[in-house]
Image (tube, rainbow, N blue to C red):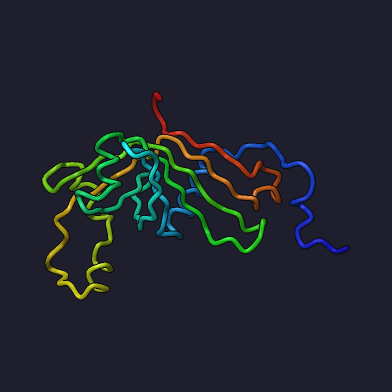
Length: 173
């Protein structure tokens, strides 16, 4: 019987991508998707929330209503896991990332807010909601600098690499 992707059969390779190639693939995923699932933990247990995100390098960003359940959970425990994935049309197209980090809530005037805010594309939301483009949102900006990322791409098997790769932020951890 003919097989579409014979390289998917058998044991997966174990070779690791070098840091630069892995970073490039992760950034490609972050740049080609705009939805994630944010996992938080709070007093009522885990909460997984679909969120539209933007990114600045390996930092994910989103806005939220200040008293939303996810924001209450972040106030109680800033540790998060974020799942990002490309549409799946078959095993060969399987591509996604689990991003682990600590969320920080930034407000206007905070130097980190001023650094991240220009990369947040709020204008498209305003157009969709018929809001004026000269009135940016005033709510908090949540940033999640990635501490580590588990990246999965089955197409890597075709090149002799493990389909699951591991990235860590530079510096002591």
